Amino acid sequence: MLIQKYTEGWINDFNDIQKALLVALSELTVSIEHIGSTAVPGLAAKPIIDIDLVFNQDVSFDQIKIRLEKIGYYHNGNQGIPGREVFKRSKATLYHQVLDFIVHHLYVCPADSKEFQNHILFRDYLIANADARIQYQHLKHDLADEVKQDRKKYAALKEEKAKDFINAIIEKAKGDKKSNS
Image (cartoon, rainbow, N blue to C red; front, side):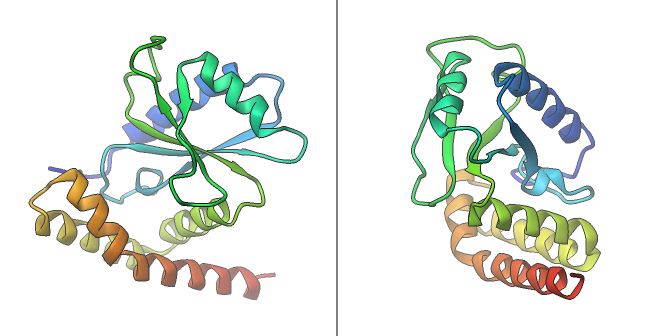
């Protein structure tokens, strides 16, 4: 099954990746956020850990890029989404006992990036709101069934059909944040 029942192991996977990244990025002021569905307790998801590596103006993107390349990542551009740079594991270079065995997506974002802010708003809203979490889970299962569990077709269909739901949640989260300020 493409979408799997939530497992607490995803938190452990994130923690293991985070530790490896922090070692590689030692002395750079960065934060590492677990984002996406695997970061939401109770939410079924594809078993892929999504990570935002966040930096502020004290650190340059090039400093991060060089350090990530040294541990076997390569920069794959922003894939059409400004404010979020994608890094992938290089299969031909280095071997890492954690980074090469836990499936993950790594994004590098400036702290003021709209994309990063939206990731956090969406994640935190789903954590705090069971009804929204259940609706999103149903949507994901329906999309996976519609594409007969095909990963690539699912990604494309999710981009198209889940966009309105995701944007509505982000707007609700922004509204909640303003009213709590």
